[in-house]
Amino acid sequence: MSFLTNLINGISLGSIYAIIALGYTMVYGIAKMLNFAHGDVIMVGGYLCFIVVSHLNLPPIAAILLAVVGCTALGIVVERLAYKPLRQAASLAVLITAIGVSYFLQNSALLIWGADPKAFPSVVPFPSLNLFGGQLTISSITLVTVLVCVLIMVALTTFTSKTKMGKAMRACSEDKGAAQLMGINVDTTISMVFAIGSGLAAIAGVLLCSAYPTLMPTTGSMPGIKAFTAAVLGGIGSIPGAALGGVLLGVIEIFAKAYISTQLADAIVFAVLIVVLLIRPAGLLGKEIHEKV
Image (cartoon, rainbow, N blue to C red; front, side):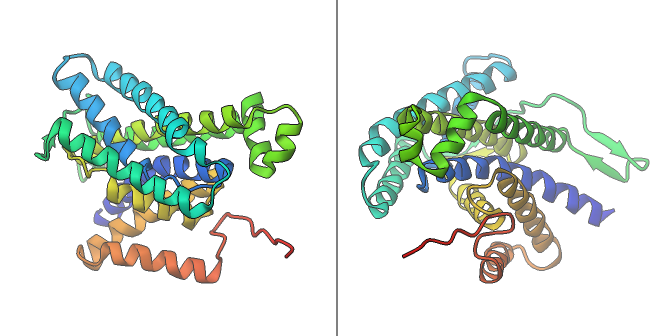
């Protein structure tokens, strides 16, 4: 049963990575930039949920909704203040700005909430599922995490393919200039992408802190980097690729910790990424783009 337990834990962790990776891949797919502050929005979502549950004594569902609303607003503000003025700037300038925003959010959290770890309260009050006479136990947070990941995947795929805003996002991804000539407001579309990505980061932050109930200003840093790795592994810019890359990365990490070494698990994860990119640079589900020079 240990193999099955590790597989389930890997899918659960990978589902969290997948939700985070969806934010990375949407922003890159539309705005063609890497938002390295995305991991810190995860941390902010965790803290907002923690404050609402622990200090305001509101029910968990209200805390999650307020965290999503807060992070959505934060994503729009960050895009308008930090990234919009650099729309025509070089990629290096945008990258440095993203790193600066990341440090700003981390240090702001440090000043507001302090460096001491916080014990994150349980927001999933459902009982665990026992199978095979109790030999296999699946925690409620694992079930909720996988279910939420599937629902988000279906909702995002439907949104991008069926709605007017989703089609505008796809048009901006293909050619911003042509989309603008067709009457699409590119700035509004990019702001919407940041809003959706930041809202997903809040959900991922709550799920991450529920599964590993310790909250610190650096909580989102390593999961954010691993989720970016998952997005690249699956094919950055591809929504199914982000989900596939996240689940694969989570399974690889858990199996590496269980059967090889906990100290080497992160190195193995990134080594797998290097191998995949050497074989298929566009990622597993990414499309290779040939540009004429």
